[in-house]
Length: 78
Image 1 (cartoon, rainbow, N blue to C red):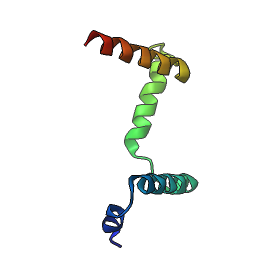
Image 2: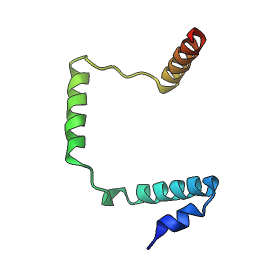
Image 3: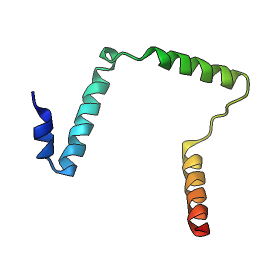
């Protein structure tokens, strides 16, 4: 199947819809998608960091605001 040629014919909006469809399909079949071994290593390291107090969790909405504020300050300095 030559999907590349077909993708070249799609509009950007259609490509995004196609990606969303593919992602949804992969999510419905997540048990068929193998997780690489290094994922377990990273998760283990992060769990250990949390247990030792080296990592903290922050509210996503709060962090988005912080990132936006930082970006605005950086733009005003340039």
